[in-house]
Image (cartoon, rainbow, N blue to C red; front, side, top):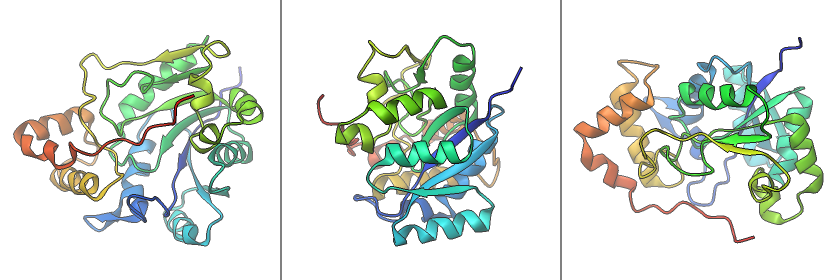
Length: 247
């Protein structure tokens, strides 16, 4: 039986509105994107990581980073991220797409494998740990087949469905079978994504505290660290996640 080619397509660009240049911001002398790719590569289920960036000249820096770090990349539309995703997956002959965004440097490989394992059991079109938020923001994993991505690429028309890649899946439960992987304990009040300077300040503290001792630190190691530094959680507690417009 043909083993599916399982690839993380990691979207990253320099032109974020709230924190421009965030993928290449450094902690301990290394880019956030470098930590993120290293952590993704620890996932047993992942065959490859492809960075999907844009044709905007500002993203030449992302390309230079990928070349330096020997990370495959693809350049596509800045605004039509769904098309960029689709073309990247098609170009790299992906069978199973794992969607992770480039602002999640603390992504946990164990949680990636958990979501992928559920998907590979079959009978589901789209699976994620974000349909109902129970994990810390920043451990977001979505998985779907290339054939379903191709369908979404053809059918999704609304601007937010093109910009955010996957809303067409979860806004149409009548068309797709959807599954949510939940954490046994609700950890959704934690925010480990990088969208603002305060987010970066927290992430930088976590990496600086854990990485030198254990490069493969887990979600549980972070939670344990934050128990000892409860004030750290307040650094970005006020930051509001950007929301999609209503259907």
